[in-house]
Amino acid sequence: MADERDPKVSQRYRELGTEEPPRHLDEAILAASRRAVHVHPAPLVPPTGRRRWYFPVAAAAIIMLSVAVTWHMQVEEGPDPDGYIASVPAPEASREAPAEKKIEMQAAPQAAPPVAASRMEERARESAPVAGARAPEAARADRALGKIAEPTTEPPEKWLERIAELRKEGRHEEADKALEAFRKAYPGYKLPESVLRK
Amino acid sequence: MLWASCPTRGGRLRGVEGADEELMIAYRDGNAGAFETLYARHRAGLFRFVLRSVKERGMAEELFQDVWMRVIEARNRYAPTARFTTWLYSIAHNRLIDHWRRKGLSVVDLENVDVEGNSPNPERQAEARQSLQRFAKALEALPPAQREAFLLHEEAGMSVAEIAQATGAGEEAAKSRLRYAIAKLKAAVDDG
Picture: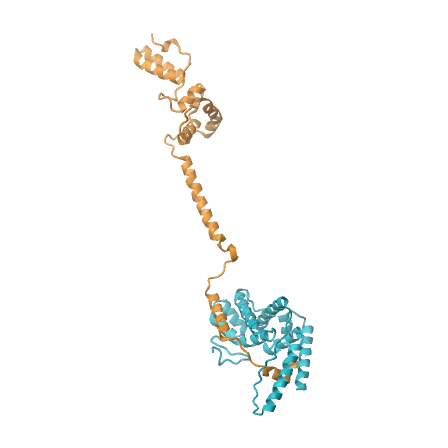
């Protein structure tokens, strides 16, 4: 608005002085301007103050947690040398599991095995073949705990038939050993005459 | 001095040529030299504008630096929707408003104005000093809004519309403020 200007007023105003900012101020401002353009581009949501360290710390925590969980899962599963877990159908195993656990509670030895070993055994029991389900509960529990060296998958009837055959063939020594093992495996099982030594 | 050869009013290009708005965009895009040119153009006018709006020189320096820091910080958001000068002085205006709110309204201290008299006659020099002090007092006595309008007009070369934009006032209000300010200062000049 040029018509507002009064030359006399402007002239007098000029006479008041031509102060300028001090040199140190110029240098400080220009240095700041140069620093600003040499800084990397700011993030979309620039963190400020205390929040500045949130992102790296959060990232590190997530990585640590992931590694820890993965490692823990590997340790928990452990090796499966017998391949039982993979070979047994899952529904059967899960159906067996509650009963097996109950049995373990009833027939657990007073001196419990180490924790890691008992876990392995429990897993083995849970994944044991279905055929063993027909055996007496106590015997199965013992078998599962590894107390019996004899075949654990053979039903008692078959086992007895085999002993009887040994008797028929006159292999009494082998029959006696098998019978002894059977008695250990199935204590109190009523034995037929054919398996007893004549 | 870096700007020893630089005219105190109107400024002069230093290093990078171009309109203010182009320079600010260049600076936004990483050209530090563009800022130096802009600063050279506006440093003196802005400094006087701030100096005559507050009482203490120390405070004026602090505010002046703060205004430029805000320009630097706001570079990424800069869009040439108005003249750079308008944008710069609106930042200064807002900063002054904050200052006045915190400290209470203050007036310009022009008690110790130095008069550079060319006349070898001591009587004429004394007369000129008195005349200038009257003018300074008149400027000091202006209501802040009128004084600000006058300073924007003189130091930044702003039109009424630009004063209105920089101060957030209506054009009529800005025009009225400027007119009253000039009328009062003219009376002080005529008295001298």
